[in-house]
Length: 358
Ligand code: MRU
Image (tube, rainbow, N blue to C red; front, top):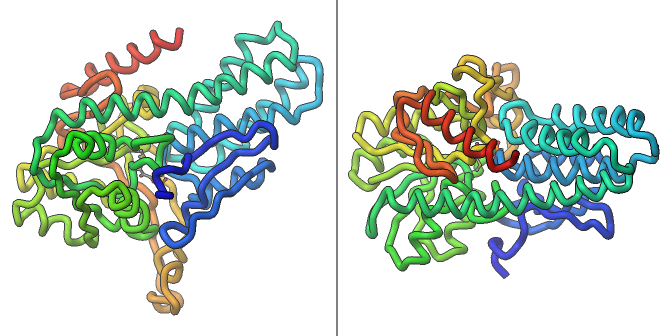
């Protein structure tokens, strides 16, 4: 069985559990977790057992359904008060990926839309909505793949940063979807996967899933990205994103902006794969994106037998960075490719998504 045969996120309703793969143990151990307690779901998101913007949204949708299922109140106001508390709790797990609050808000709005129904009916509606969020994620990634594959050709070299792959979504991934589709077409592509310090999502996850699919993947240190570009080995770059601001600045895993800057220098198209759920028109520009700061131990000790930074040395460990919109060739969304001026094109994409959910 390959890692691609597992669901990244799913609901085991009979046992009231969120089912995930513990991604902190990959690629060495495939451990499936059945999480029933809200604290364990919060921890799984915070500790990156489940990670990647769309997968965090999927997990939160299932998580809030499971929280609602446990609420015993039978009148709407007390049910909703408890629901809101559970929603705020899950929303506090990580700040940068907008999919977390996006999914929770979507679950919240179905509760409010159905406030005249019985609590049992509302719980059933929440279950359907959580499953719909996961199913839509699969469809959206496939669409991103179909648009993305039009941006390069057979024989090309591609580069990606972090893991915006199947393990970051319900299936296919965003940045990897064009790669999987090219591979299905029989194209010979070569993918360079940045290792992605400090948590090694590129080394541990992207190279693992692409290799499992039989795609030619080469793992490189983040600091080698400019070298493979200079060597002429990369014709197109695909990355994921955690929040796209209204002006096209976006946050993704720290190190993405260095890749974008180098891509500009070497004239390589730089595409951001963005489900419409990751576009946040309420965030005006990159300056307004909250960047998650994480424990310095992720840098100094986490992957080493002995500490690799002397005791007492300060560590700065931002989990994400902001890439300026002028470095982006286009955003590959499920509704097509948004090009500059991004304030206009991203707004059009969000309008299409909103119309669909009316
Ligand atoms: O900290 P992580 O592993 O959750 O960061 C993930 C990324 O930065 C991904 O590139 C992004 O969430 C897009 S996933 C389709």
